[in-house]
Length: 247
Length: 286
Image (cartoon, rainbow over all chains, first blue to last red; front, side, top):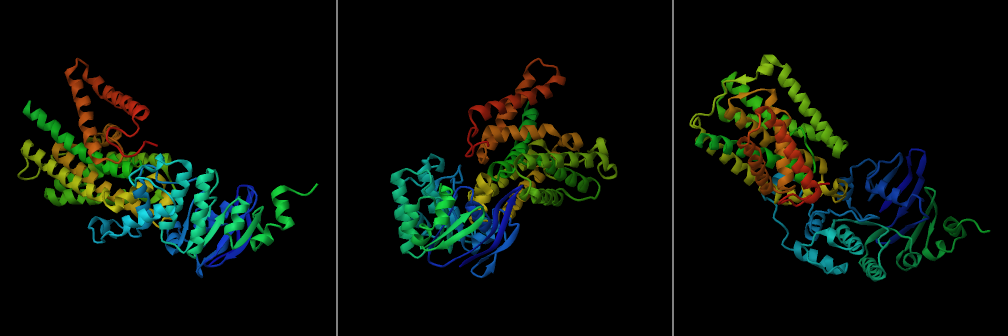
């Protein structure tokens, strides 16, 4: 489904991504792991178009998206969350989710003349999604009134409502309390059952072992190794990347 | 006294139009367009020149004033993809200086600092009261259109762009097109306000479209609150009450202008510190 070929990106003198190359399969959960500074989030930003690539190519469903705008990539089917939740802070839960749900609301004339009727199911879909991610809140609540963990769950709900074929989750449980963390794990397991294609950055190895079908390990901007979770997580090179060389 | 009140009410209505169109760009879309008064000047000069030099009647000139300001508004939005926040504000402030320089120096068309004189009020609206009714009608129509816009899903997208345009784009929104549309709409209505002001005052010069109206509009929007059209109208009324009440104090006329600006600035600081959403706003001043 997604093919990343020889991606490179530098910031000043720092080579954040250096010839990164991998593929992810449809209907699988792929975990992208690696020590801090390995370039995982930069790869996410390159795939979703937040940063332009220095070189390399990104193919999604056999379409070259390398130089496409962010919104075109989204419409092609890429949806993502953020390491630190980025919600529309002055808007309510419902408005945040409606923006994700509707595809044609950026067209002024159609919206102004109301030639497109709102989907009568959209409010129930929002409620269903809130229940799915385990958020029991009044939809009119302003999103900044949610706790940090709830904002992370909400970020996931918004990405799930955005029409997509690939879901990219950037450290969804980082900094989240154990109760919400468990909620997150259940939600991801449910997504796995539904056959969602997910690319996930995560540091919780137990979590990765439980949910991932494939693990890609990055170090210093490159793919160190990739394969099945139990193989990769016992690889000496991976342990060395995380813990440093054995004394 | 009645004539004075009609004069003030007409100005309030014209500034109401300036403020609600300013709020569309700044409050809803997050584009701090300090060139708003420049767009107003374009509308005013287009309308004034078309009617005094080219024999147009008021209404076609009025519509063309709106359209020409809308075109410049849309052009002004183009660099907003790369130039953002404070830099965009500076860029648009530069645009206001450029428009002023054009009004001053293109003397064959604008008569430079002498300004355009003899701008007539439209037939049937020459009486100040009837002209006030015309301005009020235009304000009401503009309010309905802008309210319909901001309360539609498109308005929600504009607010998303204001809060985080990159994330709005990552949810599939064509941010660039939405910003251009917002700036064009905002420009259209401020262009109309420029035309109304020109035909109301019957004389315009480059000084009419300088910092004073910008400060007044900015103060009205901030006091009334970002992302609230109703708030902008309340803000304009409050600003005029503050401004006009200075007439009743024994202050030398040369000091009234600077004092007015100082008071607006003081009110802005108070709002920013203690009530960042303004009186009726939906969004924080960021």
